[in-house]
Amino acid sequence: MKRKSVHFILTILIAVLLSSFLPWWSVMVAAFLTSLFLSLKKSAVFFVPFLAIALLWFIHSYYLSSSNDFILAKKIAVLLPLNGNQYLLLLVTGIIGGIAAGVAAIFGKQCNLMLGLSKK
Image (cartoon, rainbow, N blue to C red; front, side, top):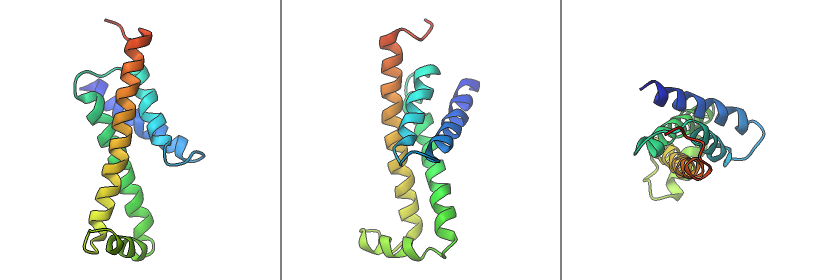
């Protein structure tokens, strides 16, 4: 359990650090790096970075949207088939970021195995 929580926190910290000077895909780099050096097993390889980045993106988008009373989020939610529900838009945002991070984490785990970095 400790390894998963360290991986979760480290993914968030690296993602926040990288997102200050890189575009949106910096979360993928963060998930890749943490999975490359901190190996997880089975489905945790996908779900720990998925949850970390989904939570990060949801909270960040909520923070940005709440500062303007969700005006832009409501307009975007009308354009997408979300019936104008801005909270559903924030959830979709988090899920998209989480999927990107989860796939990058799986790639990091595969590179870890290929390079022989994990201790067996």
